[in-house]
Length: 313
Image (cartoon, rainbow, N blue to C red; front, side, top):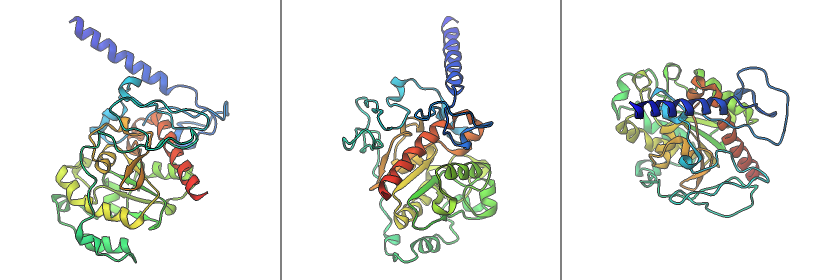
């Protein structure tokens, strides 16, 4: 009984700590997608808001409060004049030692349990001209897994075929299945606000999912479904050749990085997908249920903005 009471007390303390962290005063220069009400007056323009963010009911663990020892990384991005926290032994190590002004880029670490998938031979032969159209043609009226039986539309993806930034989500929801377009429901509206906060429009980026068909009841993707769909995602990314991929949520991040590490540990820093920078962050659908945790996503996308600006400059 004493142990049970102690465990309950620890859970309560962690919950209170999470709420206190979420209720900290927001500084100025925070985009509207982070706010539940009017923007506060600016207090310290050099401070960056802190918080947390992730996706569906089956991924509640994304928001579990973690100690610095558990996470092993500083949740804040590498900002000007602010050194990054040292990484613990056994995690990925910095790929290069650059200026503290540069976003932190990590080389593959021991958490990466499998190799990144190769591009299927059947897709390699497609010409570069109209490559995305070729991938869509090859996908056809896909019946490679059981999801085809319950779908209304294949949700292939949309946006700029030469985008510098690609958002990869988990799977279509009910609105996406009905319209055949990615991220058009409530989570999609929030993603649009995030993109606009990055000083871009949806037509400037490319948006797609790991799965092209909706899982029944929005359940988590199954391994066979991912295996059937992933080759087409690989070819989409190969055709677009973006500068940065933003993986939205647990399944997108873990599928692309071939890792079983929690999104809370993967987010906040750059990884590599082939030779493309990849930033994992929480899924907009999770933010709808946990609006107090939007600020970590803002930290993540600021790193993406800085990287794109450096590349274009």
